[in-house]
Length: 90
Image 1: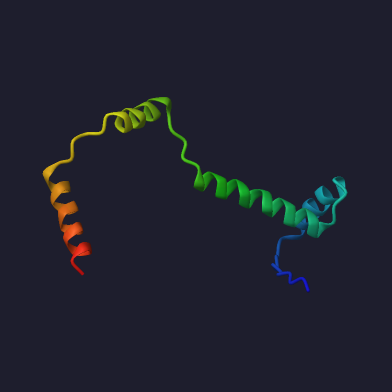
Image 2: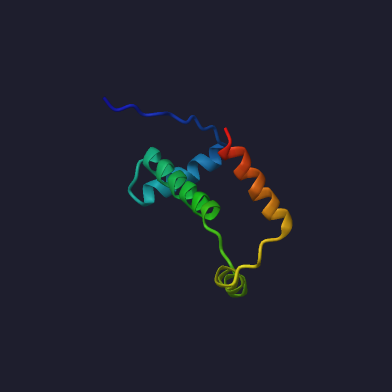
């Protein structure tokens, strides 16, 4: 058995007419058109949220740090030691 969810949508009549006309022009039902358009937009938004775009200078800086990491500072060394003591002595 296939379960489908519904999304009610209220809109001004002029908006409905425009969407219905666009759906008809591509040979889709109104429901197919709305679902496809919403899915495409959702994918665009999720892709934008998941992908980090860096300038070439930022990429170079990251690779430089990966190839030549800075020496750990005393505060980091103490934090690592504290963590190790907390996790290893339980």
